[in-house]
Image 1 (cartoon, helix red, strand yellow):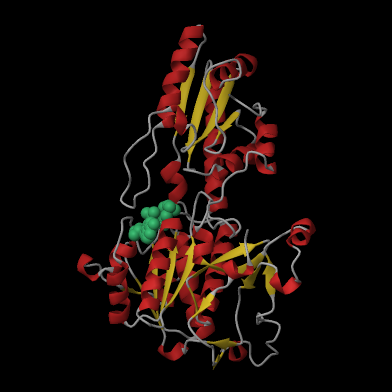
Image 2 (image 1 turned 60 degrees about the vertical axis):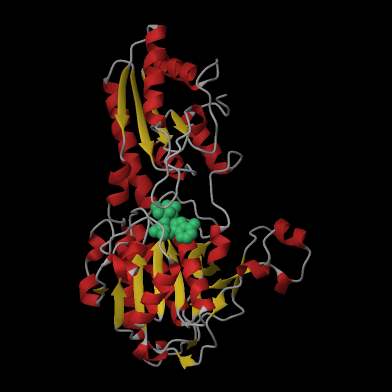
Amino acid sequence: MVTLDDLQVRSLGTSTIDSPLALYVGGRETNEYYVGETDRILYDDTLELIAARGVPLEELPTFEAGGPRRKIFFDPATTRVGVVTCGGLCPGLNDVIRAIVLELDTHYGVRDVVGFQHGYAGMVESNGHEIVSLTPEYVARINERGGTILGSSRGAQDPGLIVDRLVELGIDILMVIGGDGSMRGAHNIGAEIERRGLTIGIVGVPKTIDNDIPHIGQSFGFSTAFAKAAESIKAARVEVEAAVGGVAIVKVMGRHAGFIACYAALANHDADFVLIPEVQFSLDGDNGLLSLLSRRVRERGSAVIVLAEGAGQDLIPASDRTDASGNAVLGDIAGFLRDQITKDFANRGQALTMRYFNPGYAIRSVPADASDSVYCTRLAQTAVHAAMAGRTDMVVGRRRHRFVNVPIPFVTSGSHSVSPDGDLWLSVLESTAQPFSMS
Ligand code: ATP
Ligand code: MG
């Protein structure tokens, strides 16, 4: 049960410095721009949920509103900010870096921003990565490129050595753009800072191409990613329709959450089956994938399967390998399905032309589309407002169209996935006409 305490964002101290916003908007009345401390955003989104809590209004779980504050904690003239990107690539990373630098410069007048290269590894001095000076000129057009101009990495790093480096470089605020692992890392760095009694803020912009970080709304880059995946599904549809007994498997990202598969499939209704980690399926039996697929190809001439990489892992031997950050390496479900389908169609004496599409890296590496660029910019601006106001150990998110500040432990304590009983999965079933249960 979520409580108000879970949602309290930590501050480094009392904010005493007047925000430069008044200067910035030319002496206009600025009240309407500032967020107030009482302007909190409800966690629950239905009257029923609120009523069920049976607590007074002020005890309801609510988020701190994101946005500019009347008083700030850090003096822009002397503030030095570091930026780091960690984990896998995702559309929009460069938009976030750019917007952090521009917001610091334009709104707050912070001129000293540096980038660490190759993730947390680049923050450990002995790894020998130079820091980069991030000026408005340097970042001006980086949003036109995919990837991250700072580079990224996986693998554990000692938070003690990272804090040593922050102190040595005189960094006041560290902005971390990364996934669940990066946010756990950021929390550990924040804990080490607190243990040493330092006043260094850590603010994250959560990155997850799988859209699997909970409570923050849709993650940046997700809509660009599924639009790109939808292009491959469309191409697959064209291929299978031209072939005799055409069957395509389109493998998309989604280790534990099938959001990309679901949204990409819904984008153009070209999928016949969507397989995601959250919904188990069998191969055999009348209601298993192989029979259903055979029938679909007989009835319609072809079929397209959209496969999230983490789907059907219970059907193949577990891999005991892990990547540098300790994440389990998934088994090759696409290869397994290809073999099984080929064998099954041969046994049935049914014609088959198998096509395999793996757009994974192409999806990750594209620049953000216009909508994601706007979203990245606004998330980054929210993160800068929070950081300048002395907030720490937190990430930004957007709940029901309101930007919010959220404590890191709250977003790393669980993960977001497609509910098999929810309306998204129902939409997918309606679009594909695949049965509710394939087992
Ligand atoms: P994604 O999974 O979306 O690619 P991520 O941020 O989860 O992004 P990881 O490779 O898991 O990617 O982690 C990135 C960095 O975060 C690593 O360099 C590692 O040092 C750190 N990290 C990962 N997991 C943890 C953890 N449990 N505790 C502390 N630090 C972690
Ligand atoms: Mg991760």
